Length: 457
Image 1 (cartoon, rainbow, N blue to C red):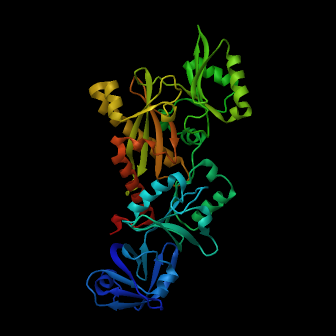
Image 2: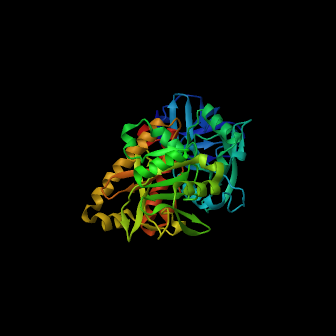
């Protein structure tokens, strides 16, 4: 197997002929052959091959051949010579997303700029496009994709099913339903790598790690769908808990529950844009309030051991670790944002009054000169946690977001893992470089999964 870069040109002849420069033919070890199979994505077609006298590595595709295989663009692209008779052009990579309010200039809503960034970087490596579930034609295994031109405008082109799909469906709602389940199964049946499979629920992560001794030492004690008795037991054991929906996000619906034997029970939460603190004389009155607000939905809540996090100005600090698989299929920490809770807030979410800092700013104020050492330990633990989740997860992962806490004793805790982490930390001026690195890592992992990798050359 060999990997190389060549220049693909289009010609106007109607026949299905590929013209190959002598230098490229020699590199591909095709000298003397009269025909080859030319492959793009999941389509492979036979083509007559003719040599041409031209220096450098060049491939000329006639109109008839280009229309059959649907090569989207000319220019520099990779060739993968996987066997003696087949040459693959590509890679062809699809970014799966969706939007309910499409326009010609903003086809993927609020995710359009992120997808543009992926395609700009990806087009340096191969054919990258974006698509929605409804753009797939399963009858002829093609996709009507959104391609980004050099000028930054969108063009629609029909191409074969891609070599790899990066799943960025925007919400749990967009991922539910039989259509999306069927879509994923069809990609897997065609042996097309599909990552990341879906959003996690909090219960998914705890279930994945419940028998993993290495990972479990960093996960706070948690109980899914707890009974009132279990909530009370955990409160007496830990003094305070977090009570949160298993499928929640952005801190919505989270309660911080506290028990003080002399003062009673306290519930802190956010409602109508404000932080609320309530006191209850008895545990039963606390639970009546929760049941009145949520009813049967409490069956889908989890209680989690409260951790005394490090603080700045008496406000707790936690961290978002943005993890990626790299081009060598290894987990790395690409970006870290430190989140300082707003006064009286139950979470550190920026929308709830939180403040974004760099990890160095946060840890130097807490641990002084030892801040870098604490940060390095947290990075090593985060990589270990990513490896544990991947080991126990049945589908492909290429990206994770961890909500990490560090307590006063330097113990590292993982509160949540997100399979499709948000990118708000990269808006911090000091983390823009990491934001660009995140894009590069996504592209490099797509290249790895497609087998168009540097290591093959």
